Length: 107
Image 1 (tube, rainbow, N blue to C red):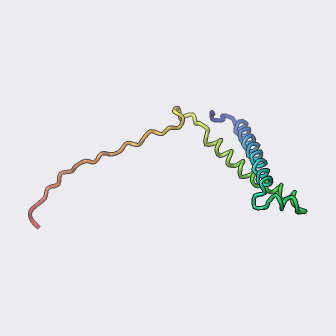
Image 2 (spheres, rainbow, N blue to C red; image 1 turned 180 degrees about the vertical axis):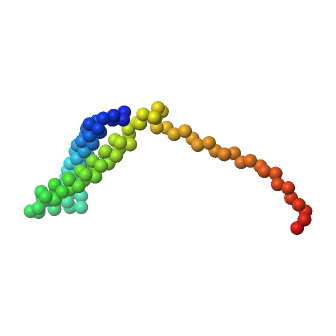
Image 3 (cartoon, rainbow, N blue to C red; image 1 turned 90 degrees about the vertical axis):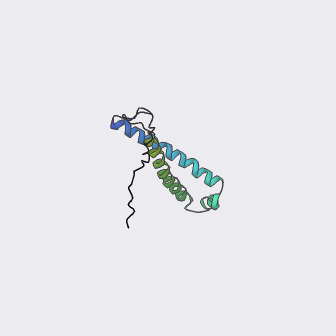
């Protein structure tokens, strides 16, 4: 993936990441309700405010998943000064050097 040169490309990347994050949130919340994890399915289906709880679960998980997706997308971008895919060169290791020390017999 190349670095977006124009702010519109970055905005498109953000909107795409948000769409993926909220879609993943819908799947996640659906699995939570279907699997009745921590009796959430029962609470949502047998409560007067179950639809509100379902919407809030989707919204807040969507915010988290969208943020993670956007972070992954940004970290995967390659900058123009990296030609090797972001591989770092190893740091040179200093070799130990023996230093001769004169000792006097006087104390």
